[in-house]
Amino acid sequence: MPEFPEMENYRRLLSKHIVNVPVTGVTVNREQSINVEPELFEKSLTGARVVFVERRGKHLVFHLHDGRRLLLHLMLGGLLFFGTEEERPSRSTQVEIAFGDRILYFMGLRLGYLHLLSVKETQAALAKLGPELLDKRMNEKRFAELLKGRRGALKSVLVNQQVFAGIGNCYADEIAFVAALLPTAPVQGLTPESISRLYGAACKVLSEASDIGGYMEIPFMTGDTVTGGYNDSCKVYDREGESCKRCGGTIVKSELSSRKVFYCQECQHEG
Image (cartoon, rainbow, N blue to C red; front, side, top):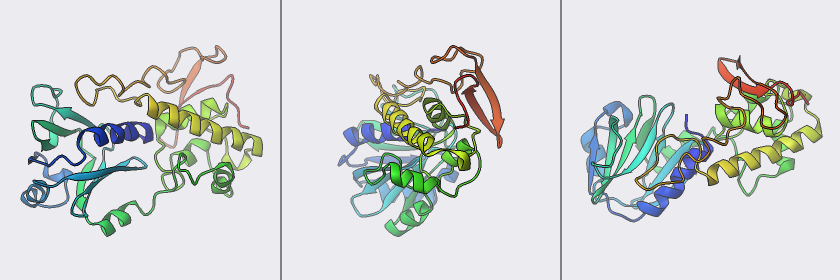
């Protein structure tokens, strides 16, 4: 599932290519991916302009010139591609929005969605999301306060969108590794030093992964050499049986609350 870095990468790329470019056509191939009748969706967007692209957690919010919003959540398996019909990957598309001769393809929206909403509806849809770790208002003290009183495994807390927005399976494991903490470590047992280390690790991992394009496998557009740049940078995620890049130990895969968990049992600890 695309997480904070993947969606931030998309936000940056979309901001360069679609802002203030009129929508010239809309195609809906799967009605379940939108929240209004296809005819209304297409009529509402044709001629519209995206004036700003915002990311909130794992969501993208397309601000339209008339005040309405498009709220996107890619969920599991969703991705974006921007280009011509000849360039697009050989995958089914659920929604297509044309900006002149180039089209923004929304793919893999089996569970994801693209909803046309008012400002108030958008705010309500995002109201339960927790703060973002790279927000300018976030700092180590506030981070520690958000963890205070929390119980459960570290990974379970990190992926809880009501605690911190945007972190999922991959980056929770990567953050825990950089902090030298087990994803299964009880949050209530973390020392102040461990919490400080964890905050630094989260900022480092999310910033670096965003800057090099996250772990998406398909480029955003032809000639895109950024998207997916983090694929080979994961220290533990999806590296079961491989050697730890820090200590030479073996990366282990286990399960926590039905989620895959990857860690080094040699150099990651509970505190």
